[in-house]
Image (tube, rainbow, N blue to C red; front, side, top):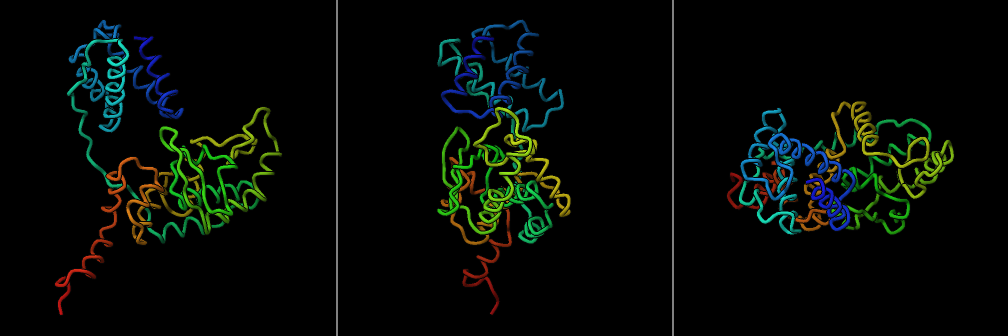
Length: 301
């Protein structure tokens, strides 16, 4: 089992280009699964039965995990067993035909345009860190990036004269996202008057010199640091925020402004347009306006 898990994780990293965050999640989920199998006396992927898999799912729910967490864990288990079958670690896939637990669908939460304006027009601290924080918030909202994509940005990924940012999304897939207006100005100010001072202040040996957004010691900012920055400025504006809220708001406000789904899909880096279509359900007022303005009998004469 250990050898199969090790090879599976290597496959995710090398062949599928999984991020470190994804790798850590799979590693935790499979460690949990191995613990269940170990208690049931199973140490070989070829010996796992459907009952073992169902019991693991039952234990996850009994431990109080949210349905979405159970779904993610079971998706990892299913991917692992498909890999084992394909690579010869087992002759059967015990997860075949086993449905994932149902998770109630939730619409993405977005802030209003007025709330976004309140967040981004608030006074930021003077100095390099304030310039950096403003640029981070502007790029998250202005480009709709995932937090992992923002963390991974390098200075040569930003083409301000051309108005584009090169982004590496899920599975290391590359895409180009427009950047302009306030976001471009904020990044320009940060590159000129913020980053050089953060890089030179107390830069640690071996720090990533290519990173766009850096901390007080010149090292690349982490996901946790970005979450903290967004949370802090959100609270100052009276908002409960996390980075993905700004991505949802970007998509919602783009649709409200008339963007077409295909263009939005490309900007968000969604593999399937059905993922993008969820944003058409976020703002019902937009649908009502379209209905009232186009249907011949929508308004009383």
